[in-house]
Image 1: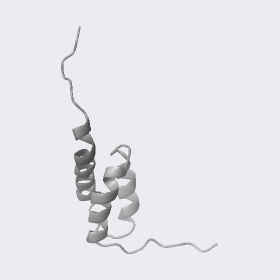
Image 2 (image 1 turned 90 degrees about the vertical axis):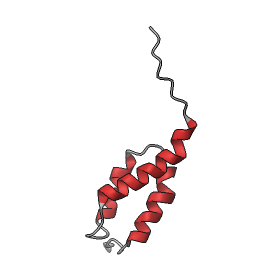
Image 3 (image 1 turned 180 degrees about the vertical axis):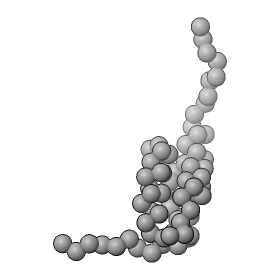
Length: 74
């Protein structure tokens, strides 16, 4: 079986993934796993920057759907 090496990706690829695929995840915690995989595609990949951008995209897509009720009933 032939092993496949990771494709060489650029900042534009990472931005596209963060902005367009990140919001489709069921929960943003998965972004860390994705960032770990993407780190193998380019030694200059900034995991924290990717996670911040993708998390913001996820929040923009999901958090408007929820109305937060901070009142705790006793």
